Length: 344
Ligand code: PMP
Image 1 (spheres, rainbow, N blue to C red):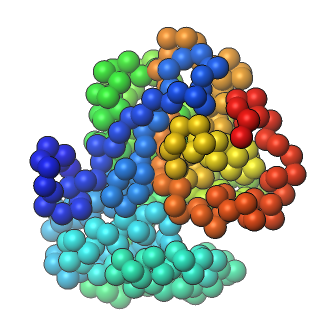
Image 2: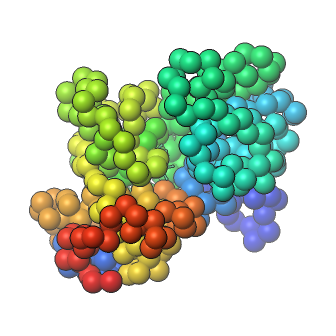
């Protein structure tokens, strides 16, 4: 990962080293200094470029991956896009087993990036042979020399953020960071970044963001898997209905839960106030910050870093569509937290 030269050998040289951008208007009434780590500046427009590149390069180093080999994953989201991008440059086949719930746009985008996409029925259990988990597993067994990224259960997911995201934030804040706020999906971003930062300064507070409808926060508090916590929600990439081993629960101090509606409004507010066109989970992370501020979490001298995981362009037919917002009933009530900060 290098940014020293003006001319880059290929797009992968632009992975990582994303900017830390001060938030001004949206936090103007808050105590503390707020900075966003804007992962949309990665060439694949999300933090997942980091793990795709790191996991693939580790497999190359170990001699597991050779030119022409196949890389398999089960996602139609950011990770799929990043793996497809890395595969093009490095000359691998990229095979993605995705759920039939994935939008046609997403599937087209992955195909554009050279991926072979297997669309698997959404409404079957994870152990059904037709599910995308089982299809990916079977393909991995059948295709000799294939690598299965398996981001929820791959320690290298944490390691990518331990090696890169953590040190970047430490250097960008000159060691003055006091709080890290990050969404938890696989948990790789928050766990790896937290581990590095806490090794530098154990007093840094690490706060995870979880969705209502996900088991992660409750598991953090009780270490018990509570099925009652699980119900459908709309934010993609945040929270989970299982416990990923890529989450290091001991590295995280606490979790905050956010709603679909408030997160959507807050993402729109970030665009309108800071000119940053970021994704749904960036709105979720910012929404958690608003809640924490209201609860008196921060003081004047604190330096709070918030991870904004991806770009807004992936959500044009969702949170950035007035029709979608209206269909969800999100325009029925004005989001209170957002309204308190600024009217839009
Ligand atoms: N936001 C988005 C948009 C994502 O795709 C993800 C990854 N699932 C996350 C946040 C959470 O990152 P992590 O998986 O590293 O916890």
